[in-house]
Length: 274
Length: 174
Image (cartoon, rainbow over all chains, first blue to last red; front, side):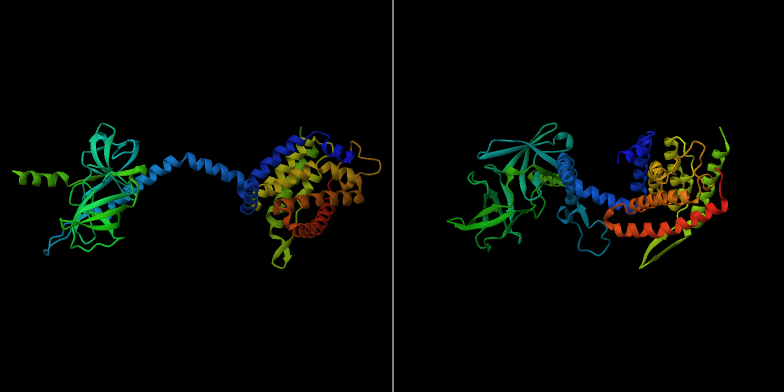
């Protein structure tokens, strides 16, 4: 045995052999599909566990960028869905070339600060005057509403959460009867809808939507579902408990909604006042 | 320093590579949907390199012929890997087939110098090692070891016979 060993290793070409073999195997693996497949499978079997872990860590590191890009994409999609368009087709013959005009655009934002939980909750987002944020714009997350912009600085804006005792939001049913949505400062999961006429039929489980009768939110964003109904004595109105679809306190990635018609409409409002 | 031996080996490289690439590449035989018989004569080049040649150079020469064949077989690296390894292991074949009195410094690994019985033993060892390495590397896994052994066996028989014929015809002196 030692003789065989001596025969093989005398003359010291081991290094040459090893270097060339490494080169050969590099070539084999990179230029031969069948051998490459076997190699990759073998590697996968032996390193699968490690790779999985590395992959997990990597995806966590890249999470930030992923979320950003998804947010951007979502904003694009939201800006292009039907709710943000208003029908402009007049009931005349003629051309219908601009039957749908975009009214709302969505801008991604992230919650960077929150007031301590209390009866008047506010949130700071990382968009401001620089990004075209103005007072009175609505802020939503993917699943529900967050609130309304009430103050703007250069790079940030303060959002009055739905969970704020000053919040008054026009909200209603699919059948376009509507009332005012308020929060009584108690339960962050529930809000209350006032001023809906009690002759309107309301059932628990009905969805409450934004009405779009303001420049804040587009029409038809789901806010929550009816959880309790009660006729408010002496007013002829409902007092409806609304269970929110999403918890405004836990929202992080949000969208600011900009109304492109706001100026157009406010001109008319001013004229009206005169 | 170009002596006869160097020139002869150079010519053999060229001749065997051409033979392998243009003629023997076409030949294969098998059964049951699989190819089991291939003919490899280029190992003869490595076998006939001078016995005293520096081993680094033998290994490099093995790589060179293997790589050349690979380029035309479109199996980049497989022949090269087998040829490099068998060139490295050539002393094993030389020792296993060594004549009783050992090799002397003037011996060339030829029938002319060492006789047919030596040649047959040497060729059997070298070709056997080479083909076994080649088919193992080609399979790239020992999972199909029966295939590897069958291919080695059939290819060995055919290559061994043809190689002897070639040596008989040309009967090189060095």
